[in-house]
Image 1 (cartoon, rainbow, N blue to C red):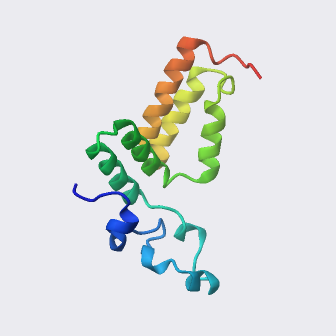
Image 2: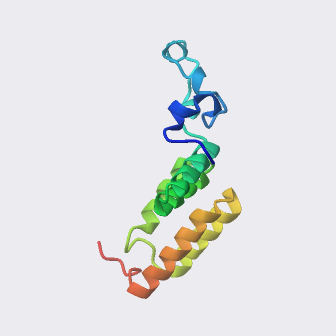
Length: 136
């Protein structure tokens, strides 16, 4: 991929909000007219995947993985993201089975495979380190 960062400057015509609205459609006039909703202010998965590729091309593999996981989360409702966040805090989930079930849910309900892999990896580490004991 030859696009360079930041995409908003190098390829703004290709960027869309989660709603599908092009970046050029998100203007102050549109906001004042009540034509902009929250989905118009949220990034879409394709843009995040493009950012991941730019990071990979720059040799920033960890950043690329974060963008890839973020792309997975675009389709997940905010309440579910917050539920997962809470369960991933050490001592919150009571067993590895809880986190494994959460990973399976992210995989099956939203196709969020990279997030599911991340949760499953956390479950393995928490199990190994004894972090399923309620500590707070």
